[in-house]
Structures are given as structure tokens and as C-alpha cells.
Image 1 (spheres, rainbow, N blue to C red):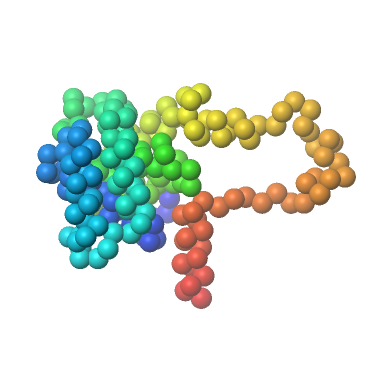
Image 2 (image 1 turned 90 degrees about the vertical axis):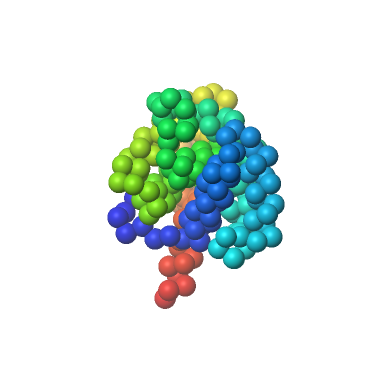
Length: 199
């Protein structure tokens, strides 16, 4: 990630989601997702920022609420702390959103979710926060990708060619002669869009 990280609209939506998750935690959410769901209902009507929550913020908050127990178990396991209350509230909120993206959002690569979380904590938290958040989220990423049951692990397995599927078997086909294109993530497309708008 570059030092001059630009906040895209998707990054801002992640931060807004983390703001609501943080507020729910301050209201005593603990591991009770209903507190977060109730707050989201309120925030859909009126937000502290007095602007509507972006759709992606709502999706992320709902995802955190639906997966709160698993998300918190993963964070607690890899943070090596005696309880989530030992983690700074803003860092915990940002990590919850990042872990939800790794668990449940097909559009976001794990490494993008981690980079975005680091960028957000750099802007709102203490000096040691980016390194801490990076270490925790990267450990979670490795666990998720190593699991044979993980969504991303299955996706990676599906990309591996079956025996005999070498280049010679594609000779003469359009697939063999056409250049390979790399799919861009939603975040990368959005950033490209914003850069093009500037010209």
C-alpha cells in the first residue's frame, strides 16, 4: 500500500460502517448482534453525520451482525489478548468490518480488505494500530485461506488446471490465442473510475 493512500467512496463506506460498529460497542453490544441491528435501524433514518449511510456500509454492518460471534472468535484468537475489551475500540470496529469482508464478500480480495483496514486505522487510531491490525488480519487471512472449507480456498482450487489441461490441448482454440486478462476487484474498478473522472 502506498503512503499516499486515497480514500475512495468504498473506503469511506467502510469507515462509516466501522463508526456504527464502534458506536454499538460503546452502547454495550459485547457479542449481542441485536444491539448493532437496532442501531443500524436508527442510522438508516438519521446518522450522526446527518448524511445517509452508503449501501456498502449497510451491507457491511449487517454482515458483521450476522457473523459477529465467528468474527470476534477469530479476532480474539489471533490478537493474543485476554478478551476483546483489551483492544482499542476503533481498532476492533475496523477489524470486524475487515474480517467480515474476508469471510463473506466475494467482491473483495483478502489483501484488499487488509490494506483498507490499515488505511482507516492510520487515519483514526494510534501509532501502533496499523501494525497491530495488519498482524491480526493477516493471521486470520492465513487461517481462512488454509481451511479446505473456506470460500476462497475452494475458489483457488477451482482455478487449478486439471491434469492434461496444458497449453497443447488448447492449440487452435480462441482461448489459446487470446491474451489473458486480469479481473479487477470492485475497489480497483472504483479507484480507476475516480482517476478517470479527474481527467
